[in-house]
Image 1 (tube, rainbow, N blue to C red):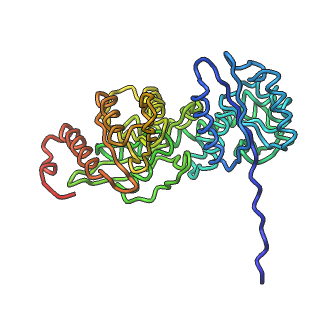
Image 2: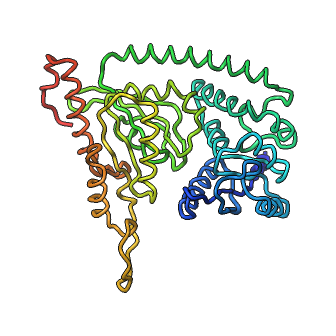
Image 3: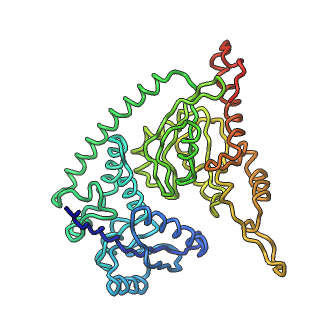
Length: 404
C-alpha cells in the first residue's frame, strides 16, 4: 500500500525592520538585523527584505515615520508578506497601530525570542517558565491582539498562549499567571532540594551568548548527549552532570544562552534555571571568537551576569571555535590602517589576552576538534581543587596523582 503524500507546511515569509539612531549606527544596525534574521530562521521563517530608517528616536505611535510605514504597507500587500518583525520591543500602542496599518502579523524581538523558547521547551519546567513569560508579555497587549489573532492563528509568535480561545480576557490571564507562578515556586523548591542533596561538591557553570558552543563543550567534557545545534537557544533546560578530573569530582552545568535585549520576563521566569549560575563556584564564560561581534556578545553576557550574580566568583574566559576563525587579508596596495578584521588568529589571541586577561584568565579552544581541551581541564581542575581544599582541608583524595 502506497504511503499518503504529505505536503510540508509552507514557511512564513517576513520582513524585518530596524531604526538607525545616534546610538545605533547603520553598520551596527545591520549586525543586529543579521542576528534578528538568524532568530527568524531558527523560528522557521524566511526573511524577504529589510527596511530601515534614520531617526533620532522611534516614533511613539508607529515606530517609523508615516512615509516609511506606508512604503512597508504597500510592499506587504503587493508581496503577500505574512509578518513584520521589528528589532525593538514595541509598546502596546505601537503594536495596535502598526497592526492596523500593515494588516499582517506583527512580531517584535521579544515576542520572537519567546516564540523560539516555546518551540524548544522540552520539560514541564521550561514549558511553565516560557508560558509564564508569554502571558506576562501578552497581558498589556490584549486589547490589540485578540482581533488580530482571530484572523491569524498558529505560526511564529502564536505558540503557547497565543492559541488559547479568543474570549480569554485580562482576568483569566492574570489568574493563569498566578497559577503559573505557584507552579514555578513548587518547582523551584524541588530544585533547591536537589541542589542541597548534591552536597558541597564544587559547582562549575558554562555560561555565554547563545550558539557559542556551550552544549558541545558540555558533551565533550561529561560524555553526555545534550542537544547541540547551530541554532539559537537549542538548550533551554540546565543540564548538570558529575565530572571527575584526576580524582576530583565536581558538578558541571550547561545553562541557557544569553542574547541582546533578552526579555526581562524571561529572566524572571527562568530564575530557577539561572540559580545554577548564581550558585556556581566557577563560571566558564564561553565566547565564539570566530563571530565578528564576539566582543559585543561578551559585553551582553557580562551585563546579564552582573544582574543575576552579585557575589564575586572564579571565572575563566573560554574563547571557542578557533578552528572557524577567518580574517580578511589586506591587499598589498591597500595603505589604509589595519583593523581587527585583518588580524590573524595569533594576532587576535594576543589582542584578546591584552584586553581581557585583567578580568579573567583567557583560554583558546576548539570544542569541536578538542584543541587545547586538556589545557582547559587542567586549569579548571587547579581552581576546583583550590576551592575544594578550602572546604575540606583534610581531604587526602586531592593529593593522589592520577592521569586525566
